[in-house]
Image: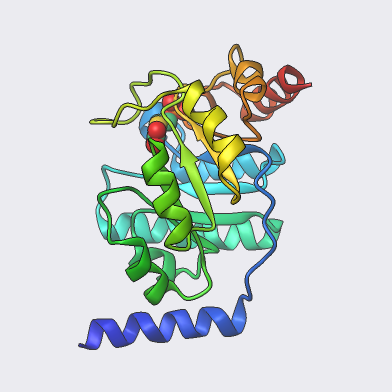
Length: 226
Ligand code: 3NM
């Protein structure tokens, strides 16, 4: 169909113009969440994250229309390209392709990973996992990294599948060869504990969105990790 051809063309363009970057999943992985901020848009949050030195930013937005999300992603794509920041779009593969994001992040209920790979070419693909079976499947189906969570309880995501938390993270750190990103309830006061249990990269929404200054919060998170 026409839509399918358009997506294939976009992926082809992406391969030609944006060869896969070597992305290091290490330290803070910032996720936008303007519903958890006061008076800041997703674009404001991304700007603050870039200024704070965050090197991977994911656009995550569950309330807005496709068009609103597309416009915000266009702006964040421009800002992240200028800054050399890796830009990953959550859920919306069409938006990720349309703005030539560096990557797409999918959950267990999204299109199958193999199909996403077919459409997205060499884009970075991340997959949320909550147990060892999902992690092993993500690796064999070609994910570039996995999300590992929830580590702690969190109110940020609705209908979140349970996981073994820190025990599941330890299992991943020992058994999974591709990069892993810990997520779920990670804050200044518990990030050192996550590191102790095998965490290397830490995905955070509310602790960043809710901070008065993201720059100060990132500095505090870094010193907690030392
Ligand atoms: N995914 P916060 S936990 C989006 O376990 C999301 O896969 C999770 O937000 C998973 O940092 C989560 O505010 C919410 O807890 C993360």
